[in-house]
Length: 121
Image (cartoon, rainbow, N blue to C red; front, side, top):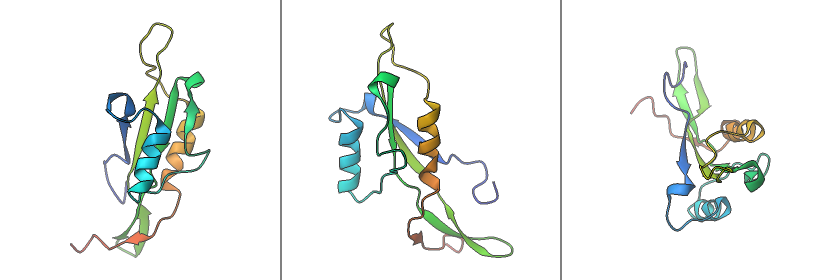
């Protein structure tokens, strides 16, 4: 709260709604080719078709922020990518897999090179 207030720490992109990408692995390959770092905690792809959900995420960049008593490097936001599989009734699985979610949230635990101080802009 002290760093970002009421802001989202991540956004999820539904691979089911993208054309030209048919797997989480293909999305990861595209992201890596563009220079993005992928969260590898628990593997690059979390979940499985058997769990009806596969996920991946980028790593959050680190940003230097000035506080009253110090300047600290804190994680910013990250992007999550989800591929949902049909349930027995044909509808896409709407839930989440707790074991995968724990690994996705580690996207803010990893340290990437600090970005320029944005507090004086």
